[in-house]
Image 1 (tube, rainbow, N blue to C red):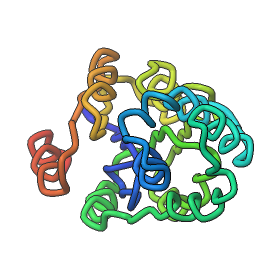
Image 2 (cartoon, rainbow, N blue to C red):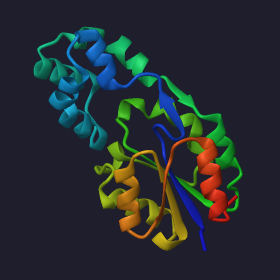
Image 3 (cartoon, rainbow, N blue to C red):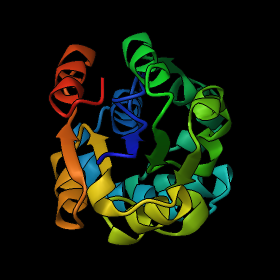
Image 4 (cartoon, helix red, strand yellow):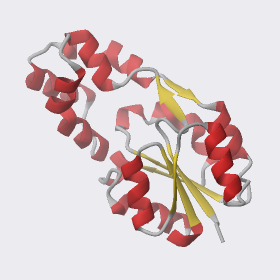
Length: 193
């Protein structure tokens, strides 16, 4: 019997208007692919530990040969815009009898911007606070432990197939999220809605 549903944040609960790779590419005219290849380790590191914003941008500038640090406040404002998906929030509000968790690969500087949805969840796990990011099994296991459920009692919803596959490897039921209507249908199939 399902007792808990765990959700991803980005591209499920809501979406950022523009991604970090896109904004850097737009500002520098360096291809998005080259930006991603050049700084993905810096991004991943910022998701598992505290990196001050000015240090982050200094490292990005050093790697790309750019001067983004001088515009870092503007860039950070653009990156912090997070539009909540009201369809998904409506679904979550109907899950009252279930425990609800949120797992997010997120940098600490963006946590406050998303705090307005945290009250919908019994447990919120942020990669930057625990030192693991999806798809590391530790982040899922911590969420299960904090929710007090076992994998077979839990559904995991994420837009990234690799993240869902890791959850399934651990015994959770996985849903690769596409849109609110598809999520509603999947949850009905599981007799959750």
